[in-house]
Structures are given as C-alpha cells and as structure tokens.
Length: 235
Image (cartoon, rainbow, N blue to C red):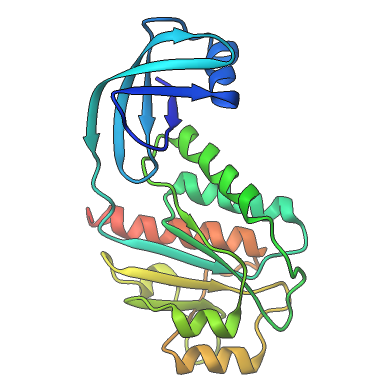
C-alpha cells in the first residue's frame, strides 16, 4: 500500500498537485482504494479514496494511530561537498536507514558555502514515503562549525577523525539507547584548531573503518552503525 505525507489528519483529506497526479496517473488508484498516510511526525493513518482525478484526490480517514519514536536519536552533521547531488544522495539514503536529524556546517576547508535546504527536504520526504517510515528527519540550514558545536549537545558526541590516541570504531564506542552526534568533515579533513575545539566540547575521535570514505559515504556508514547497535539490543 502506498504511503503519502499530509500536513494534518482531518476526517477528510485532499491531495492536490504532484501528490494527486502520482496517485491517479502513476499508481492508477481509483475510488474505494486504500492508501497509507503519515504527517512525518509519528501519526499514521489509512485513507479510502472517495473521489479522484489527476488534479485532486479526496480521502476519508478510516484508521489513525500514533507510532512511538525510536528510543535513540541519530544526529549527523556534515561539511557539504562541492557536488550537491552527493548531498541529496546522503539525505535520501540516511532517511531510508532511519536518521533523525541532519545538519550541515561550514569549516575551514569547506568546498561549498551555500546549500539548497528545501531541495534536501524534498528528497527526505520522497525517501520517507519509499521506506515506509513515519518520522521525517529534521534538516537544518547551513551553519558555521564553531557556532554549531556551541549550541548542539548530546549524550555521546563523536567526530570521524581517528588519531593515535583514540582509534576506536564508532560501533564499539557508542552506547545503545543514547542521543548521538557525529561530525563528518570535508575531503581535506578538519583543521587541528577545529579538532581541538571539538575535543574541548567533549567530542571523541572515532574511526568508521580501515578504508578512506567520501563524506556522504561516511555519513551513511555512521548512520547504519548507530542503528545496528540499537537494533541488536532491541532499543
């Protein structure tokens, strides 16, 4: 059954524009068919189509419930790379895996100074529908690294920057059931000054494996590691 995102759950819901066209022309839905709905904030419902064409789809809600959020929270912050398509890919796949929050930060070695956040949100919405999840991740506007680390805290804070003193794998360093922050730097890495500032704030250096990963790949690996340690323990 297809999943659509709605802004609220009234007894009668109207899908318009792209959503209605997709329902009518791509999925070939007709009166009486059922579709799944979510508001992206934990509410799930089933609607029965009462009237549909390519411009407008009217639904009657026949079932509604609230789905509890995960007991853990994954927040990944990344220095955006030059190719915006790669950032879109990261947002799409991380949403499918189960990320809760995404930030983008500019650092000393940043390649990109602007970001189309609305397009990234659109990618996340599409991935949410495809993966059948009911919580849309929060995607923040681009911020400076120094400002970002001052205002963001979590139970456990990591930076993907292994060093000689601390070369622990992320999935061995993190404790199940916590609120996590993971910072991922640009191709040139973070500067020594930036690493020092992070450690002063309580960030721990971790490794994501023996291979050198692109930033967006590192984000996916980190997200999956956090999910795995929580799924293994039933959190």
